[in-house]
Length: 235
Image (tube, rainbow, N blue to C red; front, top):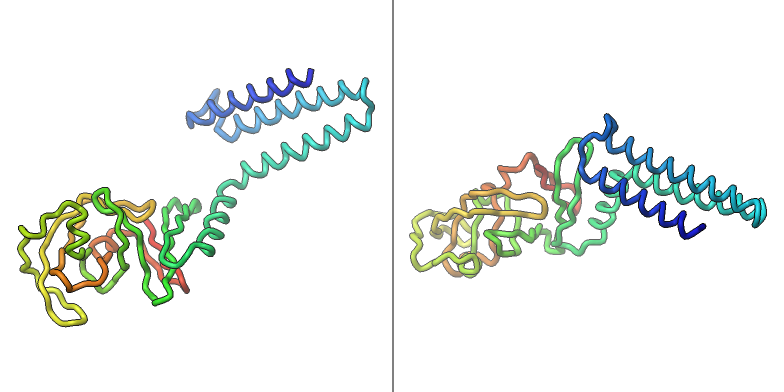
């Protein structure tokens, strides 16, 4: 009998998963309504099963089993109800234990914004692990740079022929004025944030120690915020 009950519960959970995966209303019910209806039905089946075994195995055991199942179903229901808060809490914990310079993603459910948090390195800079045209690069976030700026070595990783570029754009650096070449990047992504057709520059050899994630990317954001040891990018 117990085996049939367990099999029935698994089948019910599978049916609920398929219904919820669609995302569209079922018989006029929302996804949450369907979830709680299936959950309530499973509780009723388990309750009937527990009461039935109480006749042969004792009332005390029946109530003990019923309490265990009720505790489990309550935990499942609470987890589903507060799933957004739990995910946000998990992202916050991950951000605190993430090594400096690495990215911790956070989805802000309250207003629909997507956000990426970057932890400050020990040298005070924010390092973003970005994806450019399908290749991953470590880039310094620089609000003082008008565009994304690539080192020649990084540009070559993206398949850019630096020998054929025209270095005619003046750029101010800590060492004075240098010249860079203008290019267009098909895609720049940092975590969950992704933009296409980004203006960028390729610097001359030796002009930069790190590629820069500048304002041609940052200006496309809804907002960015420096708070303590974290930089939060939002779209």
